Amino acid sequence: MKRKKQKNKKKIKEVTLSDIIENEIKFNGLRQGFSKSLNKFSKNLKYKNSIQHSDLTSIPFVTIDGEDSKDFDDAVWSESNKKHTKIMIAIADVSFYVEKDDLIDIEAKKRGNSFYFPNKVIPMLPEELSNNLCSLVPKKKRKSVVLEINLEDGKVKKFKFYRAIIKSIARLTYQEAENIFLEKNKNNKLFPIILNLFSTFKILQENSKKRNKISFDPDEYVIQTNNEKNINLIKKKKLESYKLIEEFMVLANTLVGHYLKSNNIKSVFRNHEKPPSEKTKILKEIISEYNLNHSGSFNSQHDFNKIIEILKQNKISFLNDMLLRSQSRAFYGTENKGHFGLSLDYYVHFTSPIRRYSDLVVHRDLIDCYFLKKKNSQIEFTDHLNTQEKKADSMERMIFDVASSYHLKKFKNYEFKGFIDSVENFGVFIKAINFPFSGLARYKKSFSSKYEEKNEQKYKLGQIVKFKIKKINNRNGKILLFKVKKLENDAKR
Image (cartoon, rainbow, N blue to C red; front, side, top):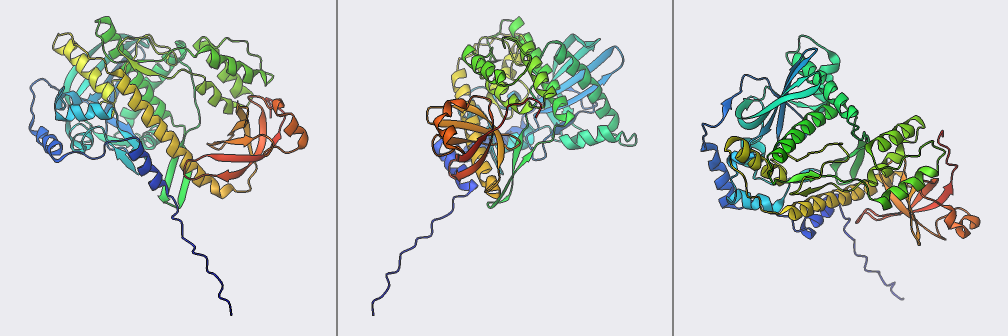
């Protein structure tokens, strides 16, 4: 009797999201953890005292951040009446603890910024600083750089800086701040503070509209994972409290940039230039696929705001993704070139010195000039900051794509709706509508009829299609699509 040969079946270990994250960290050479000597050095900084800081602990500052945040860079307060508004924005005084070329500074410069992953953070600064000494935690005295701004009829009348001790009275999440404002419970001691902040926010928001800040409002998703096999992508709520903090931070960054430029300080500026002509050409091609009344050149913020409004009116706001992708990439440079997207002449990153080295440099430049009355001798290393930022963005995209591929396992036979956002000689890339992913449909194998196989050129940028998922690669997040069917590009669909 012949024995049946048994196949040696090796069980292949399933790759998890955590595996992908760890692999990305190693591949990109990220520095994890801190040396014993550096951690010891950090813990001794709590004994560092200063007589330079004013006492502003009587101001009822609050912090408003995400649910998982621990490094609280900024705290805000304001009060306003019909004509006059006073704003105070406190930013952690990291430069007091981290001096140029000390042990922590050398390590922070190498990292460039903090790196954030689902359930994991690789901080720029040791935890003793990022989550404790520098973090503006509630009910604790913390050193900060405070920007006091006076508005008159909505316009900046004057502003000044302090190095001060503050004490935040509450750590609020965005949702909590939103709820306090909406509930309007006068018995809540935080309500008057939040009400004033929202009143000021409306003034700042109106200023942004007047100067033609581009009002991108894309859908954003966050990765939610209970365990390695249960990964979901949750659409972020579009809360007014997000926009509130954004407006306050943009104001601070703008005024610091204005001050440094006015004093001829060669600092680290945050620049954003007009979109390149090759990208606006593609954008015009896509817009032409729809019967939209728009003849703008996309050389001004007004052109972008106009098309955003047209897309909204015609219920095709999903094309906002294309508008965003048409933009130039913002970058750090020692020469100020302004910020096209925000429609500002001067801009720096000042408000996140716990997690961005660029902000820490700007703090030092401001303190040298404003408080110490001396000019800096800034060394040009902005290329490194740009490289580290690109690295963080690339890793974030990669991990999001992988998480998305796990999430999409639940939609194996689902027919999606999307639009073509790239046409190549081997196929087309399709961006899903109402789902945060895109995939490749190869020619000859992916289309729904022989006619369409022979006429691939009929598929144009912006064309709306239906499709299904053929194959998902959970290792790199790449997705192959098939059964692609054209739909009529009716702006009123």
